[in-house]
Length: 246
Image 1 (tube, rainbow, N blue to C red):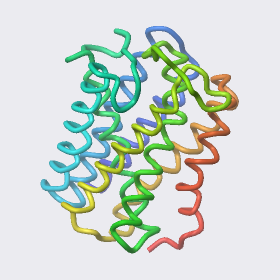
Image 2 (image 1 turned 180 degrees about the vertical axis):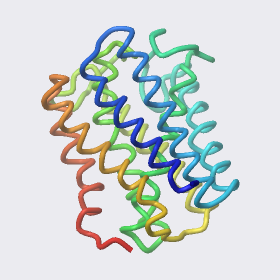
Image 3 (image 1 turned 30 degrees about the vertical axis):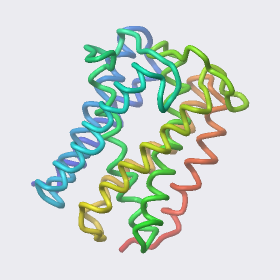
């Protein structure tokens, strides 16, 4: 029964994300929040069911509390992402940060870390690959959320070609914090390969990539982020398809 929980959550998340580009306004914002809530529940429950209370607690502490701390610092000081602020469309805020935001860090940090573990053998390489994958996901996330008006950058320059409105410093900040999160997870959790127990999270990782490319290219009118994310996140995701399942 416990093995079915991650799959059920993943299926529900996929259905919600499919509905996202078919809506707009308050409904779309509500679906955004719902997606993150389902995602964090999926990742934390999978960590707990497959690796115990310690893994779930470490994930929440590093990506969740750490994510809130770095976002609060970012909103207050402009470091490390650049100067930005959030609208009120993503629910209640604390210290200027919607409470849903650190949950997004938690949601995607776990599949990024697990997926990197399948492709690497040393700690340093796992940390680097997992951090690169998580940071590359933001090449989809930030353009989409800025286009919706969920947050805005005060000085969005210099920016990547085709991605105006978002400074390069944002992506560098993402990479720096992702390195911290993945270092903490790698140091504190046992490095193992759990085979089919991790299949729901690997499916989430692949779904996130392919659905993001499709949505940005076809439904959201964001072709540049489809290309940037497709290439850079793809470099960390697509090797999963060539690896034999253990």
